[in-house]
Length: 391
Ligand SMILES: Cc1ncc(COP(=O)(O)O)c(C=O)c1O
Image (cartoon, rainbow, N blue to C red):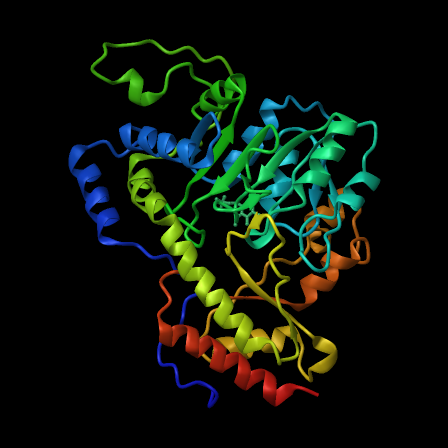
């Protein structure tokens, strides 16, 4: 271990806080035998629907499932284009491909890391059908500008809210600005179900179709088929998928969701502690939160001011790991990955802001599970590393 760290155990990046109620609930599901999709999934959907303010909430087994289902119900045709951020996780763009469309990348803003509405507008063609704004790190995108573009060009909006369960723009919850909103409850997310996701929408026909597509394209879900209401035959009405959430997953969700505000406050306190601790170091801090918005505080990302450092990002990550602090990189922009380069001809230099961020970004632990000492250890490690290598 490095002489820089006095920390004995490794601080895992994005470790979830699982409390007793979830454990008891999972065991109760196991005892009941309802380990597939059942009443708890239904309850979690109702709870999330009320939380989101949308008319419908459909639980699925990941946000990676939620996104292509949302694209499919929009009825893309081969060659239809959907504008997605270059600075996002692969699942955002892959959703378009799996629904038969072509993802068109747009650059982000350097300050907010969110998709740049001006670049979105530049990339609209006759084939553009939709935009997928992604609320990076939990910071809401400029939804007024994006909705305005969508309205003028008659485009759908599907929001990628994987980081942004609590986020609001002009005090309206994200996920409800466009046709559909997609959420994640993956292990590192703001609330967790292990794997899990949710689609919200205000349109009944989208909700019905997503429910069926998520379970083989069948007209009745398994829970209803085998319930005591009497045997019911199903009909296959679409070539569907197996994307349903299970009661074991929902057992976590129904206890995590009521704690969402408490967890958010805890992460906000850690966020402010980081802001105070790093302001004199050679880094760019996350931009201030815009008026009228709620930041979901999902990821605290530092941008290394590499011009003022004698080491690069790779060495910094290495030193953090040696100091027993887990870190993340969100993200290496999509146009730099082999698949998108090979398939769509993207190349380095195409999205300068996303690339600039890709080279400098480091995400720090920001879980409600972190204790006072953990936060102190993260701060000490960064302070110690950066003071030694500043030019
Ligand atoms: C921006 C973004 N979209 C989608 C996903 C996919 O979420 P899931 O892990 O629930 O499939 C992630 C996951 O990290 C993400 O960061």
